[in-house]
Length: 204
Image 1 (spheres, rainbow, N blue to C red):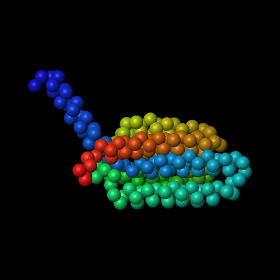
Image 2 (image 1 turned 180 degrees about the vertical axis):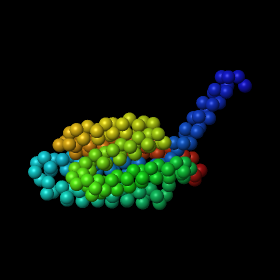
Image 3 (image 1 turned 120 degrees about the vertical axis):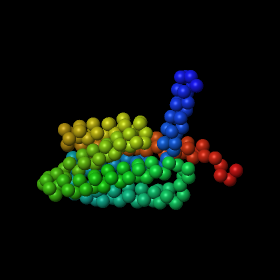
Image 4 (image 1 turned 90 degrees about the vertical axis):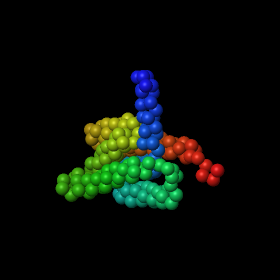
């Protein structure tokens, strides 16, 4: 076997491994749901604060995560009943689920611990979620799909900017986190849809 043949074989093997690695259903429709929620939720909080209607923020903070949780749980239950990709890489899918769970749990913990140990720390609540989601998407860019890296960097930089512009942090983070979750979610869901179409017809 000459050098060119060996390189061709290596390229084929690499393509097969990449295809197997990415043949997963990470259920990133959750990103689309929560990206949509944040896209409305955070700017609305900022608007209420700027217009002197802070008394309504509690209602918004109860309704928005409630809607997101309901939609996420409903679609998650439907997706769990029957796998969309029976031959998917389930090990990597579980790893991705674990990564998302770790960052969400960390964000929730830090969100409540920060004001408890540092009075007034609740004013950084949006930034806590901004950095948590940015780092989560960056990690997914390493283990799942490289195009996610750009969205993670975008959210991370937006979170830094929001620290310097606290007065408008809801608008900054709502837009950056909203689109930073929705677009990767759509990319992942379109990839899953293509793989579903490529599956052999089991009834044939």
